[in-house]
Picture 1 (cartoon, helix red, strand yellow):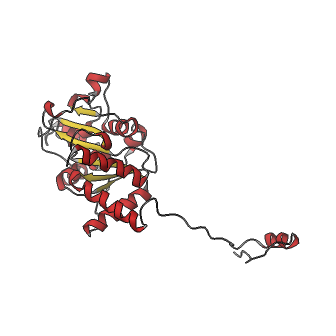
Picture 2 (cartoon, one colour; picture 1 turned 30 degrees about the horizontal axis):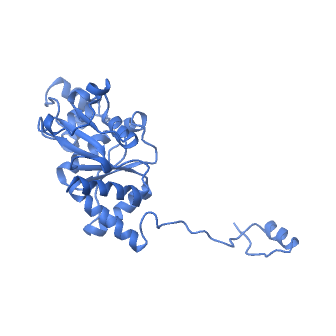
Length: 270
């Protein structure tokens, strides 16, 4: 996929879904040479650190291009999840993090982390680069779309229309930065994620937003599905609530209308 191709997909997503914020293109970085020109490093270029949810918010709201390496982060979970730091079972820091992940029983917390927590291979990547999809100067491995449930519904319809399958997802109330990215990268499947408390408090994610994750290789499929549904009259912009006219009203409405010489109708009964 050329830059021009996925940039057009970004424009199409914003147009078809009337997205308030830009879809986020994300690429895994294997070396500093992979960082595109113009990408900002938070610590080096901006004099600050960012939680990954804040970086997501800055990209989609302010339309910045950011490269997040280990030293740019201000939250432990993406450092752990993306394999950017040492994190070995049996160490004190392993137990400290694992048992702080909102599972009451320490042993169950360890089992949860071992069986369910998304992790990438240690030191496989040095970080990530993020950009609004319609201006991304790189081919995305993943696209994150922050959306309202009705917009999510349209994307689920489009994905099902093209694939013939229902999207399956697992939900956790925390660590949305890793749950929305790593499983999608590892499986190549769509994913739905609930924004976590950090997204809300620090990443400025609205209460009515969900995250839809799209593997880079499925981006064209999703947009084509949305375009075809729109042509059929089932796109996001085609759907509307229908008004019921001449609806039943309380009796005194009809009494007044009769006094005024106006039409009466069905009486509202409860």
